[in-house]
Amino acid sequence: MFARAMHSPRHPILAQIIPTRRCNLDCAYCNEYDKTSEPVPVKTMLRRIDLVATLGTTIITLSGGEPTLHPQLDAVIARIRSHGAIATLITNGLLLTPEYIRGLNRAGLDYLQISIDNVRPDKVSKKSLQVLDLKLQWLAEHAEFDVTINSVLGCGVRDPEDAYRVAVRARELGFPSTVGVLHDHNGQLRPLEASHRAVYDRIVSLGNGLFSFAHYDRFQEAILDGRPNQWHCRAGGRFLYICEDGLVHFCSQQRGSPAIPLEQYTPEHLARYADQPKPCAPLCTISCVHQTAMLDAFREQPRQTLAGILERRRLRDPAFETPPLVRMLDWMFLNPGRRSLFGKLAVRLFGVTR
Ligand code: SF4
Ligand code: SF4
Image 1 (cartoon, rainbow, N blue to C red):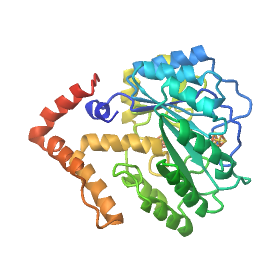
Image 2 (cartoon, rainbow, N blue to C red; image 1 turned 180 degrees about the horizontal axis):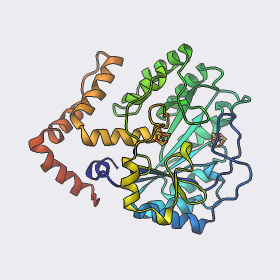
Image 3 (cartoon, rainbow, N blue to C red; image 1 turned 180 degrees about the vertical axis):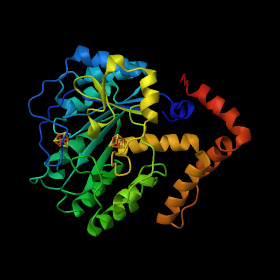
């Protein structure tokens, strides 16, 4: 994924696609579900996967609503993998059983993310540790794919300590954890209260890989402080959101723009919408789009971007030393004289075609 993102600036890095808008929960902050939609017919889903793959998409994420309500999700995942794309799933976890998890293994799922909002269910959310802990244990036992547990802070979260308890439980079970900041109903930013900020810092101090979003938090830092971010959103080009009706939108919070049928979406659309400025960008909290932007930043300004990652890491941990692998990659790829040679070798090694 990284090699392809570096190799070409014009294909989508990530496409989120909705197999059903229906959800079996009703989180108070959510504007992405209903209680009535039927699943998208599997034939239609497979056709959409083929079209998204034809655009050169590297990662295809199944989201919702609750995607596990789709009766043939395994076939959709297998189709994603048949194109050599990375298959990922965002789920509330409620329907996971050992057998279902083994089915996801067989389908070839690469990665699953569960967001857990609190320890005990409340009026805002029933995505609770108490409800989901057994599912997490089953995942630890049976999943052959990567699993990340996301906890949340921000508006609507009653007790910020819950996010820390969720992160600790994730580590106990051997899963990496991330922490997200809940956006408002327009996907826009609200500053974090001091108590939430303190919990965020404790969660990050639990440790993560150097390149995890928690350490490369150029966006997150401003979001936590309620400050706008200066960046160019390339949604519509590097990130696509395909709704249950098969229309391409910029993201879940900008449904209606540009709302072009996937069959009619072309490389010209990718280029045009990637370049189009988005007025919602400064206060945006859509982390998956931020992450595609971070890959582009790495592509365009590798040395400065790497320096930024290391500097942020040192701010949190003054004893931190650059790992030998990172020093070696720096030597290979960030020196103008060697970059071209090692770049070509990497492209060949990873079989990158565009
Ligand atoms: S589980 Fe997810 S899709 Fe369903 S209501 Fe909650 S946040 Fe929305
Ligand atoms: S900046 Fe981009 S990702 Fe964020 S809300 Fe606007 S269109 Fe969506």
